[in-house]
Amino acid sequence: MSRVREALRQEFPPGVLLVYALVIIMTTTEGTLQLLLPPYLDSYGYGLSLIGVLVSMLSVSRLLSRLPAGAAYGAARAKRQLVVALVGLSLGTGGFAFAGGHVVAVVVLSFVHGFAFGTLGTLVLASFIDLTGGRRAGAIMAWYTAALSTGYALGAFVGGALADAYGIPAALGMASVLPFLGVGMVLVLPEFHGPPQPEARAPGLRSLVGAVTRLDPRVWLAFVIVLYINLVSDSVDAFFPLFGLSIGLSLSELGLLKGMKSAAATVIRFASLGITRVVDHKVINFWGVVLMGVATIAVAYVNVFAAFAALFIVLGFCRGILRVTSAATVAELRREGKDVGLASGVYNAGLDIGAIIGPTLGGVVASAVGMPVMFQLMAVLSLGAYFAVALECLALDRTHE
Image 1 (tube, rainbow, N blue to C red):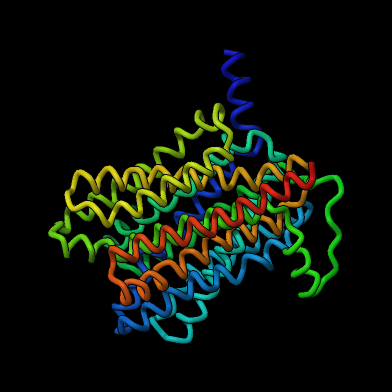
Image 2: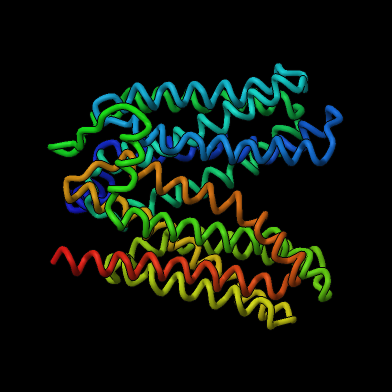
């Protein structure tokens, strides 16, 4: 029994389980709003174009929060910052229950929600890395990213059920209670401890830009990986249903493919607990990026469901494990005594940028050359960007040796 307890203490150091629970709360709230905001707006008579603008505002405001939150982060004040962000997330979610669909209130709430969620995601990742000291980065980030996907899934499931039972405004009001539960968790977390000699940085935009340009090259590699993940994945997700219907796939088959991809991404995050113990995450990064690119290119060359199923499972596996290993790349910097606040902001910004430009760029390219060629071009261009940054990182590593 003592060996079991010791193994559990090593796997889940003090405070780690609370952070996982906080992450689930955070993404359950976000998943609920993502599901319910479009029908909420539709119920008040908003047109499709305006719904699209307001939904995209969530992503834009999330992106705008990343660098300021990362620059402001400090281990000593992290708890206060997390509490403020959680309160903002609660207000930006529950406010829709009382807004009555008024356009000014909806615009403000959409911005507040996106900014609060982006801030919270940046702060939680940075503080979690400080809490664990960057140790056992692969295993820790496997659990962390699994908690993220679990929360999104719960948000869609629970949010939809609550909306059916009590109506959309009431469901959003109930979802806004969750961040306050997170406040209680933050208050009982162990204290966070930053690096022994944190980098001194003067206030102001010029200082912030300078700090961003001086970030460790591995941060930019992780940034490019998550940008690549969302750029490729979101462009495929946005346009594959249209492509699939055009070659004779049914809507039920399309739904099954999407479900298989999501399930594969979740399963591999748990499996990566073992994989990252025996395979270096740098190796996984390389082959995961290559395999994801090849599978995306291959989508244009098959036309039977079984082949698509195999490709979508591969895409899900690659997306899931690359989220783990890219986060571990950032976490290992803390083990070397480096600040991770701004690194967390840049890393998370890669996710937002990929999610914003993936469908947009995919649409422009597909309009010009067709969807099959678009899948290929998006994969090739993204692979090129990854290899350019990876080779630069390799050159810098050799220079420092």
